[in-house]
Amino acid sequence: MPPEYSERGILPPPLFVNELMTFLDKPYYAGLLSAAAMHGAGHQQPQEFFLVTVKPAMRQIQCKGVLINFITKSNMPQTGLEQRKTDTGFITVSGPELTALDLVQFENRIGGLNRVTTVLEELVEKLDATRLKEFLTKTNVATAYLQRFGFILGEALAMQKLAGVVDVHLQSKEYYRIALKPDAPKTGYRMDKRWKVFVNTTLESDF
Image 1 (cartoon, rainbow, N blue to C red):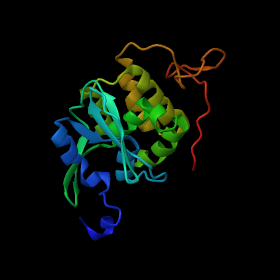
Image 2: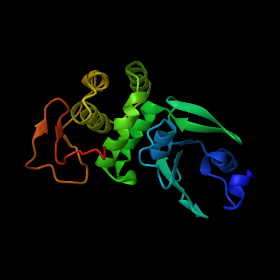
Image 3: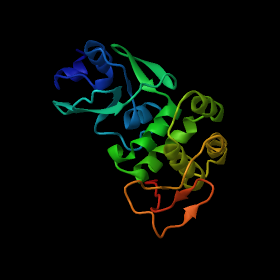
Image 4: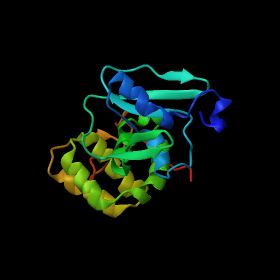
């Protein structure tokens, strides 16, 4: 064990989760706030490490100040993943585009849409319109998440080129009016016609 970790008696998650998930024989990737931090969106350093895996769901792991939270998906993405080198080997991490969409999909696990907006404000620097178009073509992302993602990009962050990629992709699909904040009422709020989103919350970045 490297001397800087010997006093704590445990390694940081990026140095052992690959071996852990290999032992458990489960596919995985580091995602959400953990992946965002690896991509430089680390204004708010996460107090927990997020691993995305498949069913059956796993309980969180907490030991000696290290907290690992597991996010469960029905299917593991086949694109949008990267391999990052660590001091002990490699770790699989979601790329910027997959990370961004996961943040929107699992916003309730990271503190809500304002937290998502704050992280995306930094992460958009790593998003690429061509890569995003290719990712959306190869991945089946639910339209509701794309609508919220597009709204945040276009209306909250003024990233019109990226928002345009999402908009064009949505035009080939059938989608319906949804609430921007999923767990809040949508009655009585204006609807954004471009994204078919009831704007039932105000998005604010911490910056």
